[in-house]
Image (cartoon, rainbow, N blue to C red; front, side, top):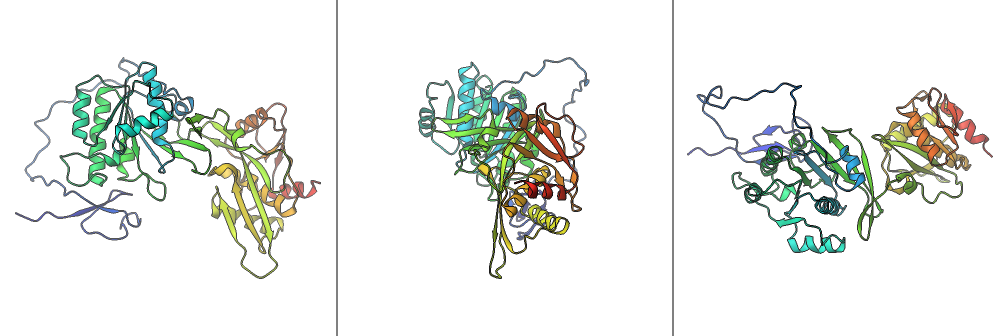
Length: 455
């Protein structure tokens, strides 16, 4: 009998290699090659053009039963999903250990069960008694959730096939599932891919909404093959710092709704509580004007969120190399902004340490934050506080120009609702909020002049 050849699959790009190596030759990622079960080799005479069942086609405009979304009972969860759970959909949720994924899904399952929907919660990491203990702490012990502790996909599908399809099926987590038809330990590439395929096929055929909990790697990406994210309909990320109270549920992929929608929760003693106005959460404690503090109206999907950006400048007396520390924003973008302030506005940061922080542990990736960061840096350098009731937004180019950004009017309307009186941004932003005084800036030098002239 011929010896089977080993093969290794890259978890980042899916490329196949017949020997292990530290770096993938296709995507150049390091330590992503994982041994997989040997591929099945078919004979050259194997022909797939005959012997199968005919596939029935339907017209795109053919009448059918419309799919009605089901609410999870958590408005912030529904918002991130695009309006609720779609029957037959497959959702993949990832997040750091201990961030609250299981707690959120247990709360959603209990609310759906209490509203009359059948829910099944299958845990591969905890015993049933441990899940019940958490439910008692959350006040959900009386919810009619069908709970099981199992890891065999064959046993799970056999059990589900003998009962009515549930409205919600939670698998916690996909890395603990295994199939006896696939070689390899649970969590390997072949096991994760095969188990997810079988569970997703059951969801599509039965109409049950499936939620797969996924582990994450040290860089925050979902562990396992990248094809797993292509197989599901929705990919969600549960983010937040365990040292902070808030949690953000972010939609990274959604076939049934907008992408980049977020739901905001706060971790409390009775579980995760919804935060209807996240701007007040991130702006708490701003009673007196302080130098180096600027408010930025961020945009997450269709939801504007106001966050505080804080800057600190420390002048060095010796010839030591100044330090640059950034929390919640891109380090390279701050370096670019400091270079523009020095080259275009004549400010000197070369002999000073620069510290930048986004309050509340929030993370920004919006380029519209450039102007707010620049305002905080200039305010800290001049030791002059900005107007407490003002917001700043706009993208800064290498020439020092303030460029327009998307949804400027929406950002200003949210600022006006929260009592802000003045908005600074690009010149051509239209649709200002009533009662809010908007002042357009053309060059970054205009911002420096305005801050320096502020008493």
